[in-house]
Amino acid sequence: MKRILANILVGCLGLVFALLLLEIIIRIGGATGADGQFSFRGYPLEPYAINVERLHHIVDAYIENERKATIIYDENTGWALRPNSTRQAGSFTINAGGLRSRVDYDQHPRHDTLRIAAFGDSFVAGTGVNDEQVWVKRLEVELKRLGMRVEALNFGVGGFGMDQAYLRWQKLGRAYNPDLVLFAFQPENLDRNVNVFRPLYYKRVEVPFSKPRFLLQDDKLALYNVPTLPTAELKQVYSSFASHPLAAYEAHYESHEFVSQWWAPSRLASFINALVQSHGGARLDYGPGSERGELGKAIVDAFAESAKSGGAEFFVVHLPQREHLQNLRDGKASPFSYLLNYINENYRFVDMVDHLGSQYTERKYWDATHHYGPEINHLVARIVAEKIASCIENLGCALPRFADSETLSFHRQE
Image (cartoon, rainbow, N blue to C red; front, top):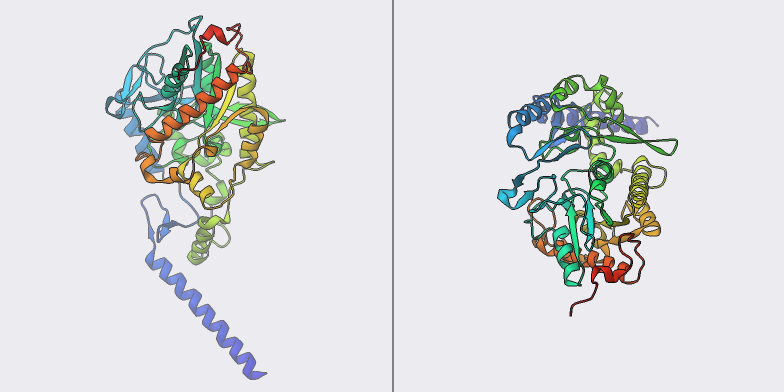
């Protein structure tokens, strides 16, 4: 018995020594940044620190260059494209109305021309490709090839969530009286819907703005932070973020992560927690009952109802990211199936996952910013055009301005 107890004691002392040694290694090997954040081997350890200095720099840099910026403050959606400007070395043209286009549009379409309006983020706006390659423009070309008189308006804005796309429709898009509305999104937008301050969500692009935020209250959408905070006020907000009223609605800021947990004095415990988190230990929930899943569903429903009340047909287009396609190729289940299945069952739905095989995960089909290259843009345009053409040919689409499809001079060209 004494030998057993002695072995247990030696084992316990050895374990304690090993843990103390690891604790010392992490403390010596780690570093504290200018913002007060301690990190070890690239992993920030709790308690986390808001990099106020970085956030102030983002705001100051934007204000200093505001006159040249092509992304500008918008009180309704947070930000928008600057009218009459260009991006991407002149290959991305923004017209007088703030839409991506080389031409300006009258708010009332021609009596014999089908007007389509597309809403979404940078995958709609067409980051990385030129004006003629973006799928919304190619959609117009494809439908004209099928014999239709049509124009496709691109209301996409980089960085938008589903909520901002819906608000852009309400505040701007509906005034252009489209016959058919395309709401195109990638499911990562579900994370943007629960974001208020863009720099807290996406750190690679220094966009300083805040954005509107919907909450579900009694199963209805309630809107906060509209008008959105002016850019000049954001430095003060970041300086005392924890006490700001909007901090409670920022899903990418959890107050408990910015104070010490009971185990946080141990750098080793914090490092183990960081490893667990990085390997799926805290997977986000997009399913039934989750805020992300239910809010996304409510926004699609509201968007559809608003479009249809204005006499427009409503289509939803799923534009998967490369990572999404890679996961499906590797046999991993999509975490977004709840929303995608709901849309498929209730709306006219184009799921590009069905048309983008594993070969499209190859790097050559994507631009340097991880957006669709010209070939995928062309494929999206062709598939969406076929869906729209089929709907019109079969008289499935309600188009009040047109007595029948012949008004559009619809005839397929061989």
